[in-house]
Image (cartoon, rainbow, N blue to C red; front, top):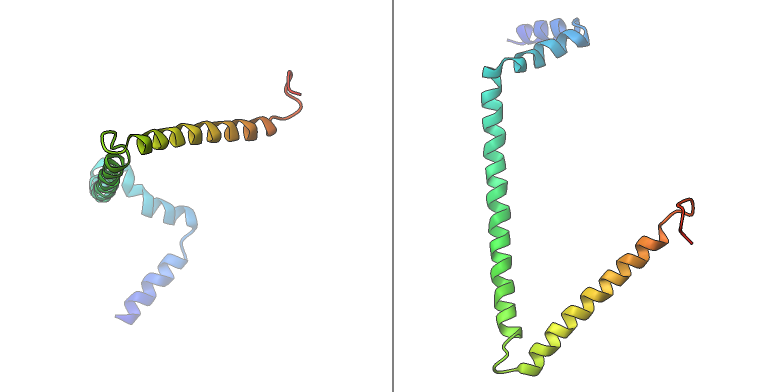
Length: 114
């Protein structure tokens, strides 16, 4: 058995890289050889899609519970106004912060820039 493996290793070592490339990837030009490869990748893709969707649903459920608690207008109207005001102020702050960082990175070679 070891002799056979040694012969295969010597035969492979004696081939040039182009010949090895043709042997390895030449079979993928045949569409029938791509079916098993595609099926393996698609099954992995479906698993990751399931994981991402599951995590998004759990996150959405937790956000819905949090909003139900924090935006209880009938019991706590002032807290609800505060949560909405804080969200709007935070959004405005991050927009202004993003725009100032964007303006700072405009090169001086652009016409009309300061």
